[in-house]
Image: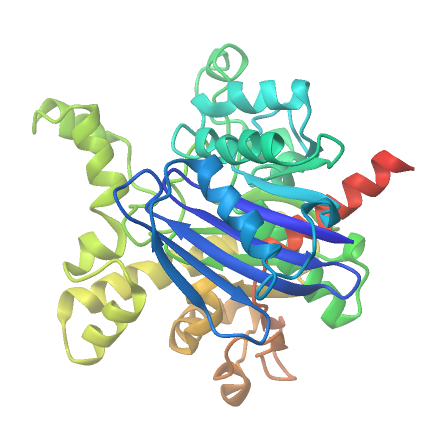
Length: 402
């Protein structure tokens, strides 16, 4: 089964084309600067060098036409005709509380996605641009599936997703915890369970997605039961430029004493905080880590605050579980920074965590990095959201046919 996976942003489109009989990536690419004077089209076919073209890309439909031309190209393509595409999987950020699983994107589900744009105004609209463009370009018989960042967290119980605000804020305004990065959390939990020889529906643990955006999730019996991100994508642990948790009274101070308005506050807590705000150097953990090694005081403070928060969330979310099969690190920082994992695991001594220093140095592999006498297993699992989207697309399309 050949599945095209699309992640459509406001001015960019990422794509991967899978042969799911082998879970092989046939080709992949990235379109950037859509709608600007000069776009960039990156395309890589398996075992070939990357092709980079500077070419005007007027809009999302224009960009996706380039994608379809590339994958059917006589020299660099991987199929002879676009009719060989069996299905398309789309990353969509927000399904609200009405879409609780991956869905076939039909008139009804697309209407819900549109209505959820108010919850993800920077993400859902461009996600949907990709859907509508490809629906125009491909045969109407080719199914399109939406895979949602929020869907994995739809299994959270009320005590996890309802905020302690006046109850009408939830019932009348829909204000609740939704959670994000669900596709990644589900994928790495599945892979961790597989690696440990545990059926996914019996796997319980903490998945730790650490990148420029970060979240931590408690998984019980293969289902999300709590997570650090909430109504929006700012809370939880500190991130590249996002503050994470802080006292809301500070927002009142910003308004009443500093004279800041909603736009100013949004810019402060979403774009000028986190690693960037604390270190004054960069939002990239690698830069902050390098500066700290050279004795930069604020960089070290940023690392201390981040690792303290991650450790605290892992322990707090563990209260939702009867057992911990593994704590699983993933995403750009989680997969690649051995020093951060060590610092965080030093916060988990109450769980009896002990690292295997040699295994912890490994990058980009699924492995247990704790020692054999550790009270809890610690793992790294490289995330693969695109493959998860492809697998979900296969599951939904096979179900619709049967």
